[in-house]
Every structure is written in C-alpha cells, then in structure tokens.
Length: 172
Image (cartoon, rainbow, N blue to C red; front, side, top):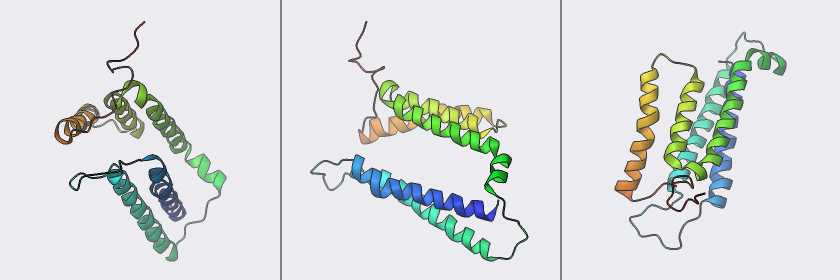
C-alpha cells in the first residue's frame, strides 16, 4: 500500500470516528434521567465502538508516519493518477455510501433485522470475493438473527420493528 494513502486513510478514519464520538453521539443518543447501577447507559456501545475506531485511526496515522520516515523509492503520485488507478475502489466506496444511506432510511420502514440482512448481503457482494459464498450467505442470515435474539431475549432491548412489520401498520 502507498505510504501516503495509509496516512490519509488513518486521517479520514480518525476524523470520522472523532466526529461520531464527540459530535454525533452527544447530540443524538439521549439517555434517561435515571439509570440503575447494573444497566449500561444507551451511549455505552456507540462510545466504545467510536473510541476503538478513533484509536485504530490514530494507530494507522502513527504507523504510516513511521513508514514515511524510512527512505523509499516510491514516487509520489498525483491525484489524477490515483483516481485513474483506483476507479473500481472509488466506485465501491460510492456504492457503500449509497448502501449505508439506504440502510439509514430503510431501517424505520422495514425494521432492524430485514435491513441488516440486506446490508450484510450487499456488503459481502461489494467485497467481490465469492470463493466462500456459503459462509457469506450463512453470516448474512445468521448474524442479524442471533444479534436480535441476544438483545430481545437476553437483554430485553427490542430493536426497531419498522412500520412495515409492526402491528399498527395502516392497511388499505
């Protein structure tokens, strides 16, 4: 991997997770006024994931900076060269943004489990590696269902059902 690209990827990941950790979570994840001592607050897992992503982004920056200090024969490519060499990756990234936007908009309509099934299926398809398609299909189906059962039955935290599958869906 190009040393500059490693540095930029770490910088983008750090900026993204810092934005999520310090802006999005405090603004949009509301907690109740009283939480019993044994129950984690609603922002615990989002903060844990965002904090881990922030640390990984910072580590990527540090490792890329250490690599950039070493003398190397790599020439620094311009932006046009990078775009032309990485058209497939850029297209996949744009598709990934569209998939996550569709997931965010579809979640209130179809609910967590169906939206996650579709999201995982599309993410596996976007990887472009089909040698283990049975594993992909199995994880696409089993992971959201196990996650739903874990939270619904063990922790008693319901996931959003969505308007389409809820009992108060308006009929024609």
